[in-house]
Amino acid sequence: MKVLEIRNVYREDGCIYYFRKFKGEAVVLLPVGALETPITFSIEASPLGTKNIEVNIPQPIDYPVIPVKNALREFIRTEDSEGKLP
Image 1 (cartoon, helix red, strand yellow):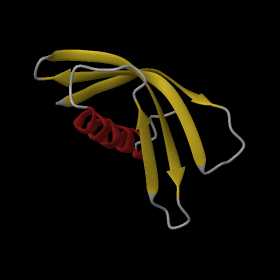
Image 2: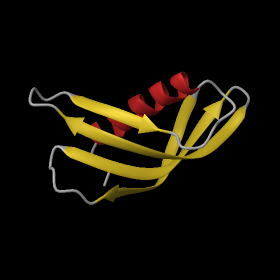
Image 3: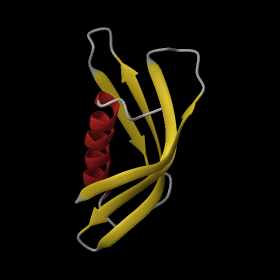
Image 4: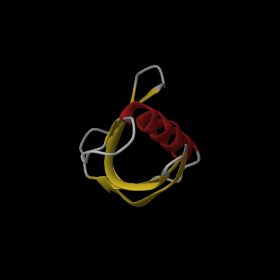
Protein backbone atom coordinates (compact mmCIF):
# COMPACT_ATOMS: atom_id res chain seq x y z
CA MET A 1 0.00 0.00 0.00
CA LYS A 2 1.26 3.44 -0.90
CA VAL A 3 -0.23 6.91 -0.53
CA LEU A 4 0.20 8.64 -3.86
CA GLU A 5 -1.07 12.10 -2.92
CA ILE A 6 -3.58 14.16 -1.02
CA ARG A 7 -5.40 16.43 -3.44
CA ASN A 8 -7.22 19.69 -2.82
CA VAL A 9 -5.79 20.10 0.66
CA TYR A 10 -7.00 23.16 2.45
CA ARG A 11 -6.57 24.29 6.01
CA GLU A 12 -9.54 25.22 8.14
CA ASP A 13 -9.14 28.49 10.01
CA GLY A 14 -8.53 28.18 13.72
CA CYS A 15 -7.45 30.30 16.64
CA ILE A 16 -5.15 27.78 18.30
CA TYR A 17 -1.69 27.92 16.74
CA TYR A 18 -0.60 24.42 17.81
CA PHE A 19 -3.70 22.68 16.39
CA ARG A 20 -4.27 22.63 12.63
CA LYS A 21 -7.22 21.02 10.80
CA PHE A 22 -7.22 20.06 7.11
CA LYS A 23 -9.55 18.57 4.51
CA GLY A 24 -8.64 16.90 1.24
CA GLU A 25 -8.95 13.86 -0.99
CA ALA A 26 -6.52 10.98 -0.51
CA VAL A 27 -5.33 8.79 -3.37
CA VAL A 28 -4.03 5.47 -2.06
CA LEU A 29 -2.65 2.62 -4.17
CA LEU A 30 -3.91 -0.68 -2.72
CA PRO A 31 -3.26 -4.27 -3.86
CA VAL A 32 -6.84 -4.35 -5.21
CA GLY A 33 -6.58 -1.03 -7.09
CA ALA A 34 -6.52 2.70 -6.45
CA LEU A 35 -8.69 4.24 -3.76
CA GLU A 36 -9.83 7.86 -3.78
CA THR A 37 -11.63 9.05 -0.68
CA PRO A 38 -12.24 12.32 1.12
CA ILE A 39 -10.39 12.69 4.41
CA THR A 40 -10.07 15.12 7.27
CA PHE A 41 -7.00 15.25 9.44
CA SER A 42 -5.55 17.30 12.23
CA ILE A 43 -2.01 17.93 13.44
CA GLU A 44 -1.51 18.85 17.07
CA ALA A 45 1.92 19.84 18.38
CA SER A 46 2.69 18.90 21.97
CA PRO A 47 4.78 21.07 24.33
CA LEU A 48 7.67 18.63 23.85
CA GLY A 49 7.70 19.08 20.08
CA THR A 50 6.06 15.81 19.02
CA LYS A 51 3.15 15.91 16.62
CA ASN A 52 -0.04 13.92 17.02
CA ILE A 53 -1.83 13.26 13.71
CA GLU A 54 -5.46 12.16 13.68
CA VAL A 55 -6.99 10.95 10.39
CA ASN A 56 -10.70 10.55 9.73
CA ILE A 57 -12.17 8.77 6.70
CA PRO A 58 -15.88 9.68 6.64
CA GLN A 59 -16.90 7.23 3.89
CA PRO A 60 -16.77 3.44 4.26
CA ILE A 61 -14.01 1.80 2.22
CA ASP A 62 -13.51 -1.77 0.95
CA TYR A 63 -10.22 -2.29 2.72
CA PRO A 64 -9.09 -2.53 6.37
CA VAL A 65 -9.13 1.00 7.77
CA ILE A 66 -6.23 0.79 10.24
CA PRO A 67 -3.46 0.15 7.66
CA VAL A 68 -4.85 2.92 5.44
CA LYS A 69 -4.89 5.39 8.34
CA ASN A 70 -1.35 4.43 9.36
CA ALA A 71 -0.07 4.96 5.81
CA LEU A 72 -1.88 8.32 5.64
CA ARG A 73 -0.35 9.40 8.99
CA GLU A 74 3.16 8.67 7.74
CA PHE A 75 2.51 10.49 4.45
CA ILE A 76 1.08 13.51 6.29
CA ARG A 77 4.03 13.53 8.73
CA THR A 78 6.46 13.57 5.79
CA GLU A 79 4.55 16.29 3.93
CA ASP A 80 4.39 18.44 7.07
CA SER A 81 8.10 18.08 7.84
CA GLU A 82 8.94 19.08 4.25
CA GLY A 83 6.66 22.12 4.50
CA LYS A 84 4.28 21.03 1.73
CA LEU A 85 1.05 21.48 3.69
CA PRO A 86 -0.75 24.84 3.59
